Image: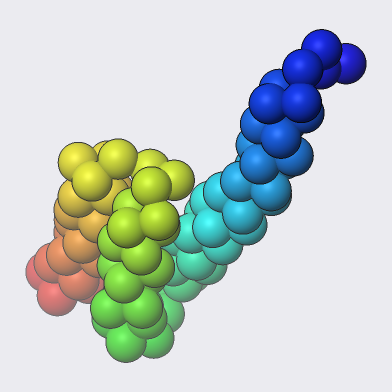
Length: 92
């Protein structure tokens, strides 16, 4: 239990931020999971169409301060890599 009025305010603020951060993080992970599933199942055309949306959400999450900018770049790079590898494997 907070002892001061300021600590009480901080607790309320942190609770709101925690909810907002969890929403953005969960949304991002869900989109990445959907994308990975598409690639695994072999729906490469749908995955190619879905990729810009996934990357956009990853960078949006970073812009909200939920994840670091470099983590966003790494995640975006990895989903791109995953699709490129699958496309290359499908061709040859």
